[in-house]
Image (cartoon, rainbow, N blue to C red; front, side, top):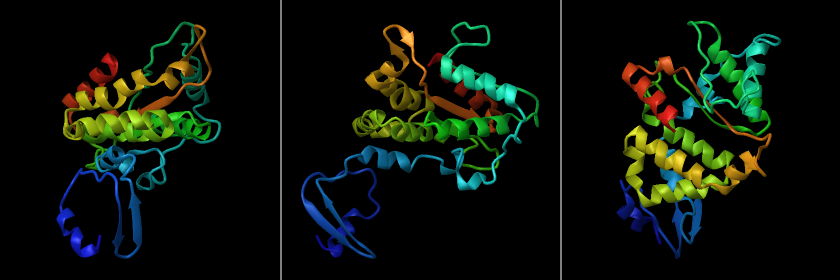
Length: 235
């Protein structure tokens, strides 16, 4: 297929090409055979906030805990994330809310924890809100960004999330309630790998994944903040 015949694709969005073989000649020559394996994830990539991730260049240098500081808070969070138990040794809730006054260092703790968990391959996803960044001062890109990361940190979820998007492409512009259920909750519930990681002969195993959402107060609308909390609590 020559480049002159590709005008039919101009301004097209979210379409799939299955089977066949063709070449696109431009700056580079790209050969595609059999279509794109994860077309849904490529659509999802267009709906994420790249600057919201813990290691995003847009956040450099990120807030961090100085060596030897905030260790008690980091230890408590690390123990909770790894064991599923609270400080009293009882089974903990799956959501840990770190709160404090402005300037108390919450974002530095979240960043340091994210880096540590990324280092041992147990950071599932992260999202850092920021009031002055339009791509991350509303919940519009929150769950799409988290879902995209999950597809790569937990490979078994890639196919499940991809299938969900291909089956209902409008999920990408649906309400955040629907996006959370269809892109995160339901794929996770269907994942046999996640089930096996958390339960083995009735006992909780040591490897658990952590999802970090920081700076909810940087989300510009208080109603949206409440919606996010409600979705996470119900999930």
